[in-house]
Image (cartoon, rainbow over all chains, first blue to last red; front, side):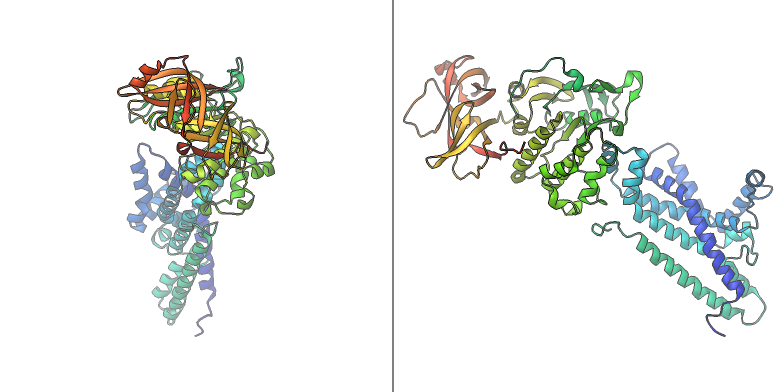
Length: 234
Length: 376
């Protein structure tokens, strides 16, 4: 069997994994950047509680997180019916649900890296920008964000890699529908479970592919995260 | 620049007026009121006296508990009416003590930052670069600049924002002594080129005497004196003399030229000889010397090795245990402090109005550098 001859199912799983991980990262990025900034710069009552909530997916069993998502976004959940009625958005047994599960699971990693990135930026530079005529948002976009770029990029890579590997929560909310919600980890699992012969070799190919994609993602992140100006790189 | 000019009345509308009360959680309390019109106004005081707090309130970085700030007749802050314009809406440029250049932008990117954001007034970029001699630095990375170069870039960046008031926070504190003269010269040049009203925060007597037209003296969060630089500073220094090192003499010497193998010029219209070997090329310099290098005589005496004999009249005598400082007005707004014994005060009959001659040893005189040649 040729090592590079992927089956239709396997290619679907790869494509789906990349789409789900990309959507998960891009969708959660604005929230991650906002929360990372708030946690780095602001002190407020209940900050500890917010931090704990954000980190919860990291310590909870993924299946529990998936169950919570199902309770919230299920068709008879707390929020699910409204999303479906008002926005026509269905998450259960849908790739968008898989993206949500990935985003939630990867969110702690994203926030953590972004927060470290912002914490490393001297807030007095924002003051300087303000005295030079830049409004709050302008100063953020032209001084703080570019300087925190390394942290944001690192957060995206970690979140992307975490999303590629998401299994438990995805299975709970999106199931494992071939071509619809069956991402690479689910595909590998189902191939190993399958009674047919040769599934082991196919699973091995997919595992190798997952390693290659993950390494490529990390390398891309390191490249993106390099300092915008050559000197003074961290 | 350190001339004392009569205070122009009715120009308060064009300047800054600030009154504020603020208390930090650590307990420090500021309660100050001050005005800055055209020219350079210095906020002088020891560290921890609240000087920087005043600047931060003026710039809008710090909102005081209570206060009012207006610039050119426009209200920037009025806590009673709930008005507090953010820094970007104030036409004020601030040069920070620690420069705060943006590390991700080139020098040119830093300079253009304020220029791009609708400056209140427009100063030509090329001219600012020329006056501050930044041409060779534009492509450089801020991290690769020396302290003096960073200070110049920070100054240029604040000027290009086109402010109606320039705030300088200890602009010379982070600069080593050797480069200080050059930075002072750039500051003078910039302030006179664009006639920017300037509020300068400093704890250095000599810097304030040289740069400022007026001074506001802060102590422990309170204004203890304000007015024309020399006389105000002298009074403040006298009141603090017991603990402080005493006054420092800063004289402006014009028309420096080489005469019969030595350098001389005129201070307050009188001949003044400068130490040899000074690289003086301009028309004028500032010199600095200590009161203990000044001897007082009732009448001019000949046959002395001392080269400089300046005539003047005693303005005040500050007696301390063991010795006294005597201020002598030379005319033209310049004055010299002499340190003498209490016996000498009695025997020479030193009292306000008494005419004396100040004998100043050339070897004790240190030049602060030439800058008055200017370019303006």
